[in-house]
Amino acid sequence: MYLDAVMNWHVRRLALVASVGVFGCGPKVGGEGDTESTSAEDGDGDGDGDGGGDGDGDGDGDGADDSGDGGPAFGGNCSSLPADGPTIGPEGSGPTGYPIRCNPRTQSGDGAYMCCSDDPAAAGGALPAYDGKGINGDIPLFSGANNDLGTWGVCVKTEEIPAGTGLAEPAAANCPVPCNPTWDAASITAVCGDGRVCCQTQELQPSDCVQDVLTGEYRAVTGLDIGVSNPDGSVVTDWSQGAHATHQDPSGAGCLQFSGGSEGPAFEDCVAQLSVADQRGFCMALGAGQTCPLDQPSYIDACEALNM
Image (cartoon, rainbow, N blue to C red):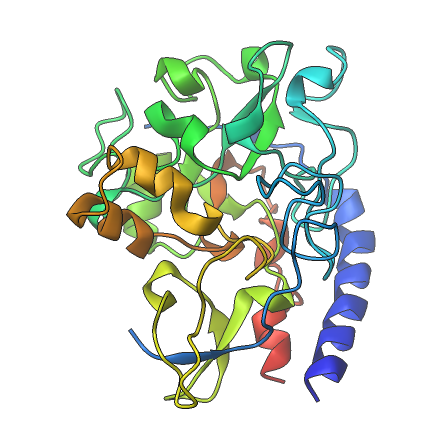
């Protein structure tokens, strides 16, 4: 039944790719301003290109194939993209309207493009207090000044982002404003500004889903699931390189750096904020009648498909 659900999800995904090809990613980018579970998959990425590892053996997420279950892959540095490419590159887009991912942790920082983090997670589960945005929140863990601590982002030609709409932090200067599509409307407005929405940048993959033992339903895994025991004695997730397809900061190296090398309260809080693709996105100003691709009523994500 699980394999049938995964196959059905891929069929629906291909249909969405065809429909989103018309939508593209044309709108302006930027912003103004625990339950126990059983893993849907044990994780199929081991750094050899067949799962949630990086496909090049070093576990940093920058290989040519990052996910064996259809997840995003990127085989190079943003600086290798041609300067005459689109604002958000490289050419082409997936079902979310965004191109394939890049890894901010491994980028050189030169060239026309920058690998901009799309993860707004902040200390204490607060909103990210980006410089100059007037947001009542806390320190962003993987974006803004800490853009290079995370492993997920999108290549952006930052000079083409409208002035004043992007981030002000030098480490992510003029990057689009990251946001969390699962936030409530008030939080999205607080971070993105009036009239803007939060569009998810990457799709969930089946291995990002765990089965909640209280409800029996599949849901997206989070850092709060790390080390939690299943009824059979196994753990829901260890957040290792191959545990999932789109998880932020596999093995917690970025969180350890954020906490100054200490595995104390700051590290533990950072780990608790870790998530997968459903909690990453960018603030968007959409045109009349436009919606985020993954907000279309017909879209079914990987975890929803497993519950069908």
